[in-house]
Length: 408
Length: 230
Ligand SMILES: Nc1ncnc2c1ncn2[C@@H]1O[C@H](COP(=O)(O)OP(=O)(O)OP(=O)(O)O)[C@@H](O)[C@H]1O
Ligand SMILES: [Mg+2]
Image (cartoon, rainbow over all chains, first blue to last red; front, side, top):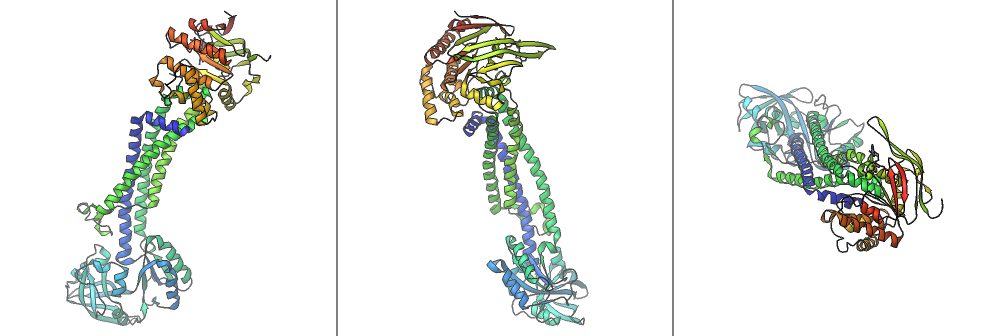
């Protein structure tokens, strides 16, 4: 009875109700779309960071991340292999690659540059990261390469080398002895990411291992896992490797800035969400309060007939819930439609974005939304509708039948 | 209280404070209503008719006095017990805008039965019966705004009676009707009183209403000054 009466009161004032529902739907779809944009940018950033070179999880010798040195290396021990096998259960680890890296001085014709000399297994790396796709001149490393190297575009320019030129790398081997070798430049990377473009040289893993007296030794394992498995895989690895001289770091343990940035931006969105919710609540409250005040007399009659105040107050709340609910249904539909549309169509911001392009952001934003953000938003709009009903409902419970009946 | 007395009020007082002075809307009213009575409460405007009706209908509480309905000390009831007492025992007809706007005529009549928890088919059948009784056969699906003032009052009467209350209270039921419709509404109520034995207390200064009365109670300045049986 309450629901049917509430519903009829809503359609009785169809025009006013429609305006309210439309306002809720617009507010909600705008929020959902903005979350979609925000999450799209953030997820792309985080994915790019992990997929271009860093990986989702890295395993090092304990304390290597703080103070890297070749003496803090790892080997393919049974402990490590078993830990990886255990963590990979259910296909949670998509791919992994063993790497070796050190600092080196690269010498071109008459300049030298300090950079990271990174040994990669070409095949493993192709499965693990997208670094090979960032090569825009020449080619990436391939199996069977001898002393070949791939340089970041800025580094190559600074060194004054072009494809086919020789680059000499100077560094120390595991025992501190000077090691130097000549590599032929086969590819140049333009990733848009400064650290990679100006400070990275990639050479075949096995060549670097022998150059550094590091045969069978590595500095890190880079793992690629889906975001939903990140914590579980990390926990599993930490559990199996506990006290055995390893460190297991997630991408954001190593590069916390990006995660903090995302959290900061999300915090702004929550503030924005709060403002929109206030508007939504005020709109619904206005409608419900108006329709309540119009019916004071009717409420008086209903009370006289023996209808309890609780029933009348519930009716007002149900009206609010119906208005909010319809607004949510339409808003959710429209919002998800927008997200789906721009998820495939993308929003091209290349004109506005040359400066931001650095931070792993793509110039075309494909909207996507975290389910947490979606349900939080929908839930809070619904909650706003219910809260909006509190004032009118409370006023109903304060009505005196005699005064209500003679209300004009 | 003897068996044939439905309502007994003793020393009812109600004061309003307005403009710095106290107005005694009810001043020591002693009042009895017998079962099956058809009593019209009359008197000049401001004499306290509505106030008395509100007390008797448990819509308002007197400042002093006692009130028993059907042997029950109703002033001792809590707010929700009063609501329930009204639901079970009292039917109301107000001056105007009695009906719930979003409900059809028959749904309005069935509404009280629904509050009492009666099943849908049953209560709609009863509503149809009462629509017939008040001469609105076939108009059951109309909304209040599709009915004339007189028809709306008839629906209100049907609603008041459909739940077979012990007491039907009507405040100026004819005030918004012309004399022809006023008269037919009064004779309808009188007829139902005769046939169904329900007790009516009607506040009205309309001569048409007084003419239909079995007993006329005159009020003046919050007191009952005379009781006449025409
Ligand atoms: N809520 C109120 N506040 C102040 N005074 C009131 C209130 N209700 C009634 N009164 C006063 O109480 C007295 C009796 O009023 P009541 O409404 O019972 O008269 P009535 O006989 O029904 O009059 P009418 O024929 O005009 O309906 C009047 O003097 C009125 O001004
Ligand atoms: Mg009156």
